[in-house]
Length: 268
Ligand code: NAP
Ligand code: COA
Image 1 (cartoon, helix red, strand yellow):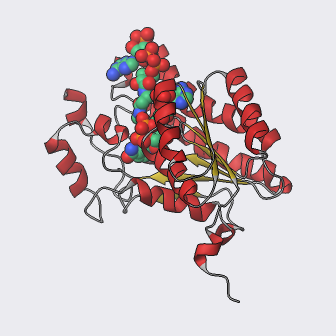
Image 2 (image 1 turned 120 degrees about the horizontal axis):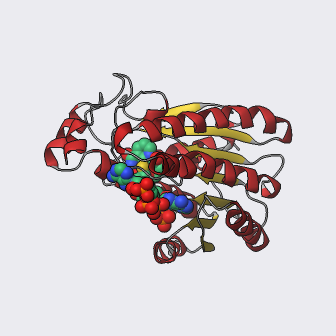
């Protein structure tokens, strides 16, 4: 019997761990896996947000567990990953998407402000992947870092995010090389502007900025969180069995014109 694409996207019984999975794009990714039968572990700082997200995930009828931890704290993340492994077994899919952002010129951010975003987006990403390695299914695990267009589009007022996400994409490529022999694939998804998310609320505060941002996207609209989740499903499936070290924009073509003008957000 021919294998259908829905069989290839069936994650029944698989263990999916999403760092930063309590809201927005990352929660939509977790939700998409839960709908396809996966057992979900999520982690973020706010115990309240984690509890809400876990309730949403459990509504699909599968196991889900949440943990409160900060990706900047290696020991805490290591303990959470060990607990998740004990609960649901080896991790089949690891999504690392915790991030922070604010709009400020380089001279308007302190060293601590710059370091805060680098610590969450880049060092936090390293922490999650480094601590997870011992718990990833070998061979077969898929790791996905959630990057951003600032990784390759120099964008004024985003020095911290540009530096952090560029580093994250390089980490994706390096770990794809180091972990390929273990049968672990490592890729980055680069979302474009996604509607109704905290990320876009910070970069385009107000109706006029939102309209201008939507108009700048070649496909003429914001993306949906489900469209990022779809790419995460495909990248974690046998359909992407030979894909590793890839940095894949899912952005309606929005990064093609180059860095974004964020003056309106700065003035806000
Ligand atoms: P969001 O809803 O604010 O999601 C960020 C998540 O990360 C939250 O669950 C947050 O939960 C968690 N988090 C933040 N700092 C953390 C820390 N130190 N330790 C652990 N968890 C932490 O934002 P979003 O807009 O959906 O963005 C999600 C991802 O997509 C990010 O990686 C972002 O860079 C990327 N992205 C977004 C867009 C967009 O259009 N929105 C575009 C390009 C890339 P807690 O507050 O509970 O910790
Ligand atoms: N402009 C300049 N500096 C800012 C700033 C802004 N708008 N917002 C925060 N900072 C600086 C703070 O002033 C502080 O530096 P200082 O002590 O030298 O003044 C530093 O950043 C850390 O701020 P703090 O609020 O203590 O950090 P936190 O760890 O509690 O929060 C953030 C991290 C700032 C990134 C916060 O916005 C956050 O938690 N974001 C998560 C949600 C998010 O950003 N979602 C979108 C993802 S794309």
